[in-house]
Image (cartoon, rainbow, N blue to C red; front, top):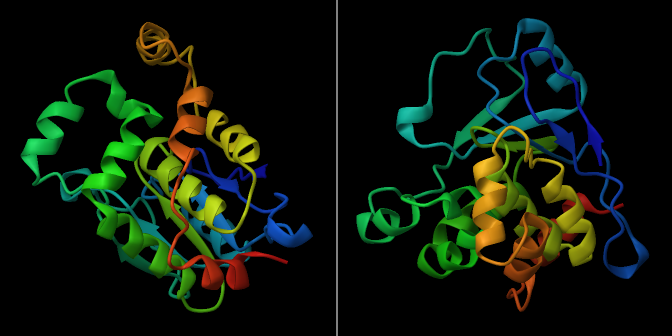
Length: 215
């Protein structure tokens, strides 16, 4: 994993270099997770293109999307796949009212409620046109963390390494209330992520993801 310092970008990280199934490893340049990319400058977008990204997957809800600060390169295609499904108020009226929504504690309940939404994102990554894929949410932690967990698990990255990636996006100093909430639940962000991974069913797209993402 390596941080990507793109002008105007936040929390961008190449997910290459992680040991995976069969003695292979995730390929650098194949998959990037990030926070929202709409504040990227022209120089920032040029760096994204130079990194090999050709598909951007936007996981945000309609009300989160604003105007880009600079034009996106013609070589990059953006796919909008809002992950949350906020119209399901029975689910979100429970989960969005507590700090759990900013932690991996909501991951397994979410996957049980919205398996098709997560599956669509993995399918889009697996079958995207040639080139790197960047997926992002707003802050680059929760929805991006969920997709990272699913993708990395599908290609056989060990849970500990997936947890290592997740905690890179956690800033306890900036959001101490999340750490305090997790402590009240008797856990940590890392432990909650590992618990979400425990017993996770393999993705139906695992074979295609391995072919695309592993070297």
